[in-house]
Image 1 (cartoon, rainbow over the protein chains, first blue to last red):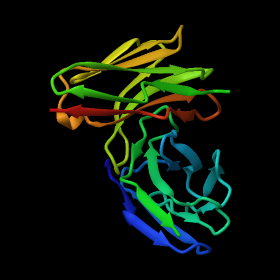
Image 2: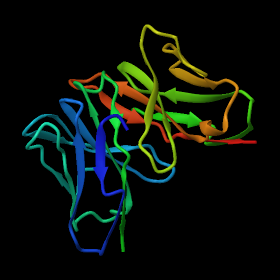
Image 3: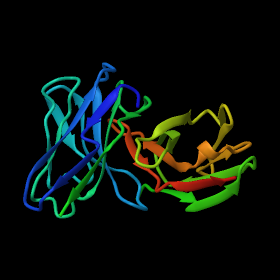
Length: 113
Length: 113
């Protein structure tokens, strides 16, 4: 999975709880991304970060938050405000913007009941 | 609205046979197009990437073509193997201040013995 790790592989939470998904990369990439994948749909961008201490909202940022305190780490918090949090979450990184190939982590499947 | 469409939605072929997957896009201005392979429950892995000036690119048994005039791409798989069973995702980048990436919904390929 190209030097990107996501943990855990499976995560279960009760409705109303915040949960943080981990994403770490050792590729020395500047840009990192979080996507959400639902059955039958293309990946949708939640947040992205091009440099440390800076990040931008993607297409579906509501109910999510991120931080980028270190180049290699880009954790995603799914808050209780996210109405349909159950999904497969993918983290990716690229050297410098999307002109370069994105490398994806193995994903975290979050189930909220 | 920039979109990426893929066809067919799913495909079943016999081991050893060839197949072609289609991708149509309306993304403009165009930056690049990539094909990814995603095994079930895993992150996508890049197969090919093509810029505007490239019209074909191969990666082993995978050959991608691009017609930037008609905004169509295809992924041809030769002599399919059971391990080719996966979802194949077409991804098109829109050239903006940072290239925005738009994912197609994917084609689910099943190779059966």
